Length: 217
Image (cartoon, rainbow, N blue to C red; front, side, top):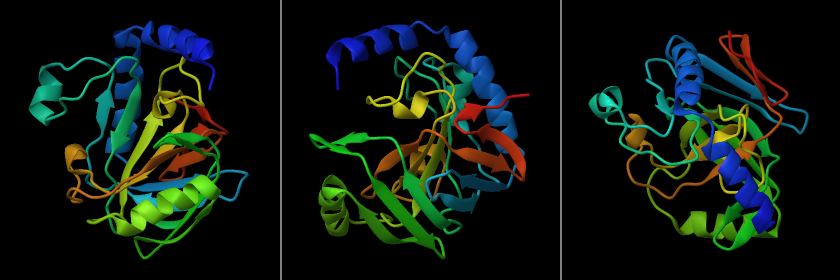
């Protein structure tokens, strides 16, 4: 990607006040905390659902405060701006057709499709770089075939197509593999995260993201 565009985006996204990211992140986290069922769709073939019942979300606003320390959320980065949660690891079912390129190991994965059944990743397809990732995944260990996390971005100045996809406002990212850092049950495992840029996401039937736009009350 373009280095000047990336630098411009990084500067803009880093300039969003942590208070703004924290306020929006906490509003989103409160919705996740009181919800059970997540359903994600889009126009590219995604139809994916899972449970977050009983799981606690974490707000990544670039600041580690006393509340974060108490919750064990010790990671911080700038630019920041996402809320993440560990779904119930055996609850995922359906298809995710990622529509945002993801840099991985010197490659750009532009097309990746996962299918989950009975809580496990059972089908994998995509472009030639996704196939290289798949080969590495097959050699991996641990809960590599279980859902690891859901992340929703809240940063209004971040842009898709770089290395910060999960923080883009309205972006929906899904990962597989380890999630103990989010309070999940998957130990260390081979994992991968990729992003949907135009997703629809509902919590217990209530729209939270529509066509990649974050809807906060």
